Image (tube, rainbow over all chains, first blue to last red; front, side, top):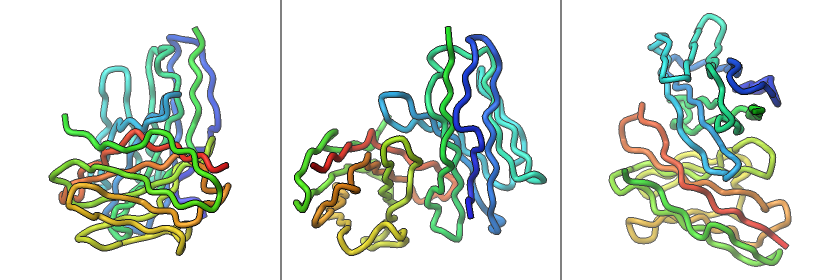
Length: 115
Length: 114
């Protein structure tokens, strides 16, 4: 069974539009962490955010915001006023205390921002 | 800012040959990981390493794989007899002892098996 589901395989929007990337996770641990990573065409993995299971406060960082809802097991990522440089594959990941905090990855969402 | 470094950035190897991928984790980190990403697919966990031993490994990490921390700074992944399906990007990651810290990733080694 998928532990991290990113149902959107690819999203394409025009620059300056807002876009939300969905992530749904599954865990039985009470202590876990959720992450978003960005993978630009150059291939490296860029850490964006970490959220622990006890902190449901939403977070905003510039044009990026994250909405964590334990009730729906979701950790969605919104980019406002998207830019061409935001084009990348975005991965949501889960780490659980019971699994030595290894990262369990979603399939990724390819985001294309058109000028 | 300290970073995880991986060498080489690209490795081309004949099928059946052994290959060693090298990683230098961040110096005060205690937990080390290898992940694999087949082209166009998701990132998959291979193995975690702590206190000089494997702490977790996935089904992918079979007998052809091994990891080692030979000298206190390097962390290596060895693939004994490579197969075509081992072609992938291999990422090394490390984190410190505090559990809520994120894993820091290297830029990856692209392994191409011919």
